Each structure stands twice: as structure tokens, then as C-alpha cells.
Length: 272
Image (cartoon, rainbow, N blue to C red; front, side, top):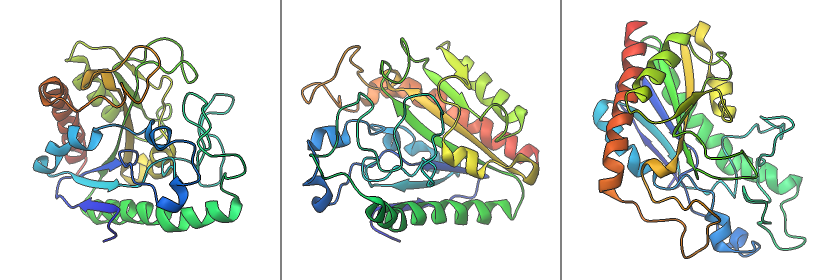
């Protein structure tokens, strides 16, 4: 296995993708960037730690350590926007969620470099996901759960404060309604705000793999990270972001997510 790609194999019918928790940037790329902090600003901070209990539930986890600013493995490799008409970032982002440039003048990757990055990181990550989904689906239906988080307030991407739980199945296209309903019910027990197919309907991973008629059910969870870490309400700076992982603060959220993943496993097993 590549040192930037981690796969934990489990036996439950659940694969968890962790596409944005990485912060590694090759030195030759980082040297062309405006700021090491900006280059890591939009990571899904601490999500791999938040879900580390999932292995004990029998889940399979696939994680890339490469920063999304190098290549975003949850974007359409063709470059097409997942949210036409809305602000978003591309396959090899050139700016942060807040619109700050990631590269020095004249240093953005060209098409040849983007193709190289895709072959080096994007393709192997998805080959690993596909391999694990195929392994588990040989025994019956399987759930792919794509795990994400984002700052609660990012005015350039969405208005106001994001709900705590943002569930996406691309308007019902990527999984059976019973799975979405089960995940929604598990989130509702928390008493926190939630939405289904709001600002985040599911990225390329969810849309690419979700084939419910073939027993492949994909769903995305985008957490507002205030649920497990200190999340400044206004603009962030190197002095305030990222805030450290706080186990005591994260404990209730881990309990909610354990219930969510349990609902995913129960759904898949009910289909077998």
C-alpha cells in the first residue's frame, strides 16, 4: 500500500471514505503556493480521529493523506462542476473556500500537471475504494459513507450557519430512501439541526458509486465542525485555525455518529 493511502479492511457491509482529512503537500508543490496555512485551511480537520471508532464496528476505511489543495479526490475528474451556478472548488483547487489564491502568480498547475496529479493520487484512491466495495458487495448490498466536515460559516459557499448534519444522496439518486431515512432518524435523536440534500447533496464519490438498483448505496455526511471542535464564527487566521481536537467535546458527536453508522450497517444487512 502507498504511504499516503491507508486502507483498513473490515467485514461489515460499510465502506467509509475519508477524502479530505489529509494535509500532506509535496515540497515542490508547496513551494509554489502562497501560504502553507492557506494550503491546508480547508481540510476536513480531525474527521479521521472523529470516526476512528468505526473500525471496531467492522467498517472498512479508505483515507488519503494528500491535501485536497493538491488534488480533490471528491471532484469530477472531467472538471465539470458538481453544483452548476454555485461557487465551488475544482479538481486541483486554485483558491480557498473564502476565495484566497492558493498559488503564486504564474504557478497554477496546467493541464499536463493536473493529469499527472490525477494519475498519482486520484486514480489510486478510487481504485482502493472500488476494490473494497467490490470485495464486500460480493456478499450482498453495501453502503459507501463519504465522511466530511466544514466550518459552520463560510459566506462565499452558503448563507448563514450550516446545519449540524448535512446528509446528501443527490436527491435520492445514490441510495435507497430507507437508508437516507435511517441516517436522518439517527441524526434527529441528537436534537441538533439537520438537512437532507441542502447545500451539500453529495460529491463525485457519492454520485459515481451510488447505484442502488445494483445494491451499491452511497451517502455523504457533511458535518458542521462546531459539533466536535471549536469553530470561530467569523474569519479564521493561523492563530485560531485549526483549533485542536478536543476528545471531551467530540465525545457526544462520536456517539451520534456511532448510531448513524449503525443505521448504515443495519440497512445493508437488511438487504442481504
